[in-house]
Image (cartoon, rainbow, N blue to C red; front, side, top):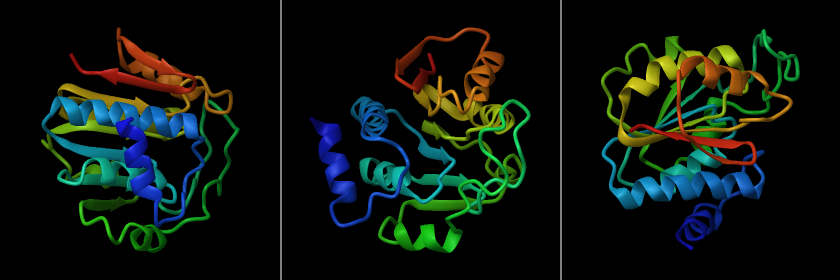
Length: 196
């Protein structure tokens, strides 16, 4: 299957740097391959890069598209209002320099360090075909949707991690609050919403 070829290619000579289990990685790569096969115009956004594992996969699947990477690259600096599962300092075992080094062979990666929405203030009117959000928090997910959903082209998609994850209840609430109605492709705790 095509998505497994990309997974093998992305991590053949590189450490697998992600907390995503194989089922989630396969879902993400399947949806990405669907966008690739349909030749949907537009670049790629990832919100919540952490150590760069899924960014490496997306940069491998979409070598001719820009991969815009949004993250603090220093972990969480405040707690979420919806859940206290992750605390200040969670996911701090990363850095911008470390992720840049890990992705140094992927020239299509563009880094936007900082906190949304501030880190996207100059990111306007960019056509997007694929957005991956692994934000963990309600507030950051809603703010990211407000920024990026209008840029997603018809036929494009946003993929969410932690759809029904007990440690991140704010994600599903954020999606339900943002979209008045939607059809989702769901696999476990992953959710994909296409723009019609």
